[in-house]
Amino acid sequence: MKKKISYLVVFLLFITIGFGVYLNIAEQLSIDRSKIPEKVESSKGFQKWITNVKNKGFEIEADEFSLIEENEVYNTKWIKVFSLDESGRKEELNQILQEHQDIKKVVFSPSDREFIDYRAEDRFYLAPNEARLYGQREDKILDARILDCSIRANCYFDRAYFLDNDVFVISEISRTIDKKDETAVDCLPEEECQYSFKLHVIDLINNKRFVYESTSFNVVLNVVLPEL
Image 1 (tube, helix red, strand yellow):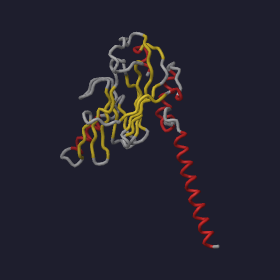
Image 2 (cartoon, rainbow, N blue to C red):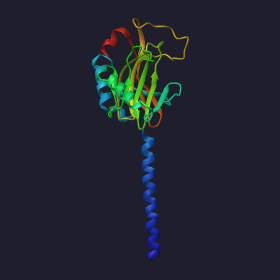
Image 3 (cartoon, rainbow, N blue to C red):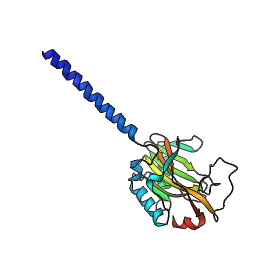
Image 4 (cartoon, rainbow, N blue to C red):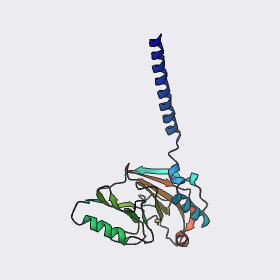
């Protein structure tokens, strides 16, 4: 009798574990990956950003963004990695971090050991349509041209913010054209064109970049940029 009870207890245990695994898988499958992740939407950075664009007259909602691209972050042509143990690297790191304090369109991670420079101007080796990630990750110094956007699409990075030390978001406004489409008709920033917002969610731990795009709208870029 005791043996039968033991078998029954083991059987029920397996059933319980299996049911728990099933619920976990079901929950993961129920998450709509085509929409902005909850971690992003509920963040202070996103809420501040979307409130600002709404106040500037843009009719935009978080649930109107959809996933349009997913790829890897790191590109060996765009990234430099140094060891902190190399002579002079710690001093160089601290100097560069200090030099980028209190600069508009430069934001620091919660640890204050990394920053994103998304200024729309030429600086160092960067063009106005390129964003830089620089700082310390464990025992390494990372210097990366982490993101670029299409000049042909009149792109502009308007905001960046960290969710934590490993995940950050860069928002972009640009025309709704394929950056690889050489036949797209030119439209100058002082002309009314069709644009959309793109949110680049960058996960350094998993080496992933997700791009979410809003619904489109017509604006004159030179008019709205001072408002962003």
